[in-house]
Amino acid sequence: MPKALITCLHLQRRFDDFRPRYDALGVEPVLPKIDGQQLDAAAMRSAIIGMDAVIAGDDQIDASVLEAGKASALKAVIKWGIGTDGIDKPKAKELGIPVFNTPGTFSNEVADLAMSLLLNVVRETHLMHQSIMGGGWLKVPGRSLVGMKAGIIGLGSIGLGIARRAVAFGMDVSGYDVRPLPADVLSSQPVTQVGLDELFASSDVILIACDLTPANRHLLNADAFARMKTGAYIVNVSRGPLIDEAALCAALASGKIAGAGLDVFEVEPLPKESPLRGFKSCVFSTHNGSNTLEAVARVNQMTTDILFHALGLETINFTPNRVA
Ligand SMILES: NC(=O)c1ccc[n+]([C@@H]2O[C@H](COP(=O)([O-])OP(=O)(O)OC[C@H]3O[C@@H](n4cnc5c(N)ncnc54)[C@H](O)[C@@H]3O)[C@@H](O)[C@H]2O)c1
Image 1 (spheres, rainbow, N blue to C red):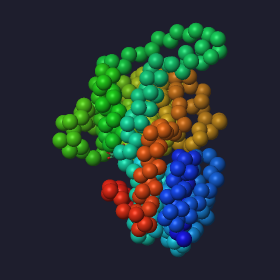
Image 2: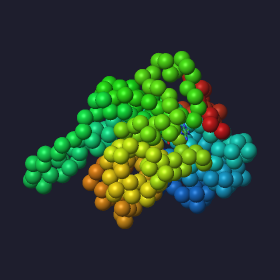
Image 3: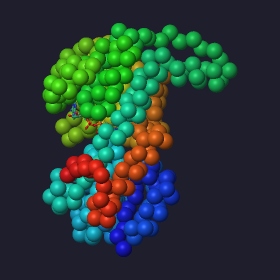
Image 4: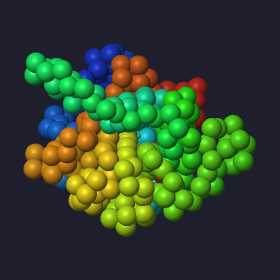
């Protein structure tokens, strides 16, 4: 009987909805207990043994995990969601293990969260909320989004979703991407593509929506903050390591950066001792951009479909996105 390892917590929580399909197709689901947000490489290495396929969250699937899987029964890795930075894709390709993900499936939800973080940061609604909960009635002078310049890093599905929303808020939107966007895509989107230097120098708000790759770790570092407008805001809904958090703390402390809205962090959950916790000008969320009832149901369904397709047990009516 084929075995499927399910390490994505969103799918684990709703697994009873899918269990009858596994039973009908004769696939044994294996749902390990996960403390925290994901499994590290050591835990994945032992969990992968004997598994025919895995539906993974943000677990670490490095070369050692893939080699252990290949030596056992592994035929496919399905990433629940978009970011595949935790998976050694060149190694998967070398070993002939296909890796699938589900791009574009919750761009709207992550773009919504980016705008929510931005609105909270510029209007400091978190401080008013805290005040009221404590019996107070704090008035906070916020900033107007209308007329501000938004600079979006990464013009993929989330970045363009943010661009459409930012324009609706009356912002002037430009974006930077390592790949030039085709003219027909750009002409249909409310965004001008600019270089990174120009984006840093001209933006009142910088929103990060690109992949994390080996080339762009700490894309926002001390040098980048120095090149930004004084009083700029930062929003990151992509991956924590794109920002050097120590440099961000220094920029927040000096006032160079006025505030930040962060859904993702260099280490997750954010360590108790993180100096970021000391900044009232920051609003945080818990790497939760895709977590709406609707988006989770959609991606649970899609990854389950890809799993049975990859195991040759069912045909599907869409082409799954293969990243390795
Ligand atoms: N917060 C969350 O819950 C959450 C949920 C989903 C995805 N994400 C993250 O968001 C990222 C983007 O998702 P997407 O659906 O828009 O992906 P996408 O593939 O549609 O777009 C990513 C874009 O980033 C660009 N890019 C890569 N490196 C870059 C760089 N150094 N500078 C500028 N642009 C660069 C790519 O060319 C591409 O256009 C994912 O990789 C994932 O890490 C976060």
